[in-house]
Amino acid sequence: MPQYKHHIFVCENLRDASDPNGSCGAKGGTQIREAFKDEVKKRGLKGTVRANKAGCLDQCSLGAAVVVYPEAIWYGHVTIDDVQEIMDSHIEGGTPVERLRI
Image 1 (cartoon, rainbow, N blue to C red):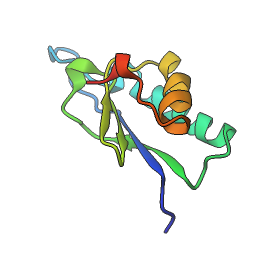
Image 2: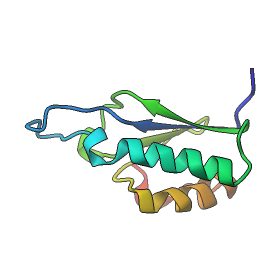
Image 3: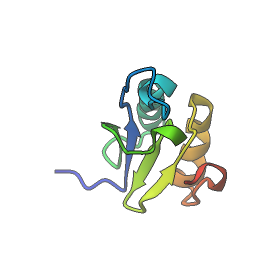
């Protein structure tokens, strides 16, 4: 089993549209995970970085939510446009993206 340097979990939870917290799935969670997977592949990081679907991370009001391990860095209000910055700064550069931290 490979040892991943980073494991990126993206919430894709879907709640009823009437829920006041909303849901990460409705805020683009699936598309964000796919964007992370595409970036991992494009950058040749497959085998050292993994992007996975997560169920509810209990942060839907701040979603789309993303958590990166092993550092346990939590990000909120993540959009597709943030994926490249997270990959550049945090995953490859080692510096979390402070403006997105929760």
